[in-house]
Length: 307
Ligand code: SF4
Image 1 (cartoon, rainbow, N blue to C red):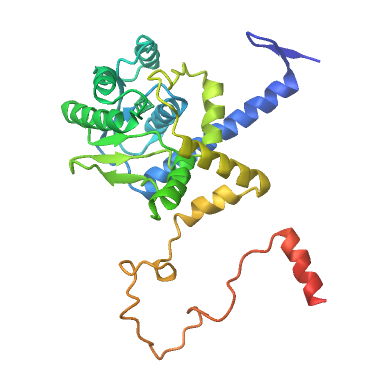
Image 2 (tube, protein in one colour):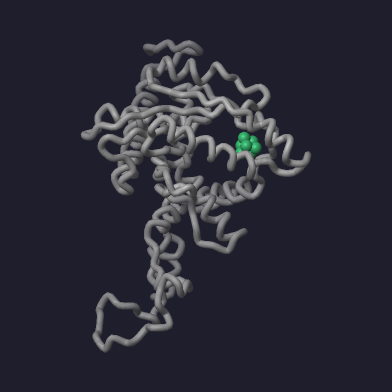
């Protein structure tokens, strides 16, 4: 059997071919999903200068990577500039991103701001530091966007982040609210976009492995990981394992909101509702049970009932 050599080990030719095909499919899927989000939400327009926030994590590396690919073949002209905020966390390897971004040939800016010391000074030991840390980071990044003349600020949140946020808001804040793919910043001056909105995290993991991004660990600040988010992520993983396709369905549901069938009187005028007197074949059949596509187990149960 012929073999293809890579640095670590010999890979049989048929296996190497399969890996190559899978990687090609993954790349196509990533480009398609990012492209779809850009078009569906009108994220990037002619002449935009997009500030791509790169933290050194897999998601932001992948976002930059895919945006560069799309820029090369886009029918419109836009510019990308990668920005990293070095928050001076102990052990942050400050040479990694400049080296990577220079080799990539993308314009970039490293903003050095010691928010780590501020946070440590202000927040009492043992209390969570993320709130203040992200507020400071946000303010700095918006200022940098102004200074660079960026018209859009791109963040690397993906589909799974959005679903987790949706459940966190429902469980702990009593709100049906996720992360928007595009928004106006709280200072009212910036458009923030999330080009990975349609992308599954597992695809980003695989892409990061394939591209061998020089990942910078996100635990340098010593802060505890958000436990609630971790639990929700675990819950979603379990659901998906037991019911494949559930994540996809839930994500689709976020794009298919029916305010008249929720209970928010500010989104639907329940008080002013009047009968129209006109029959509508597609209207609401309030007395019928809603139709759901039957799973195979449910389908056989239904067959037994019908016998
Ligand atoms: S994990 Fe650390 S760096 Fe990230 S927001 Fe929290 S305090 Fe800041």
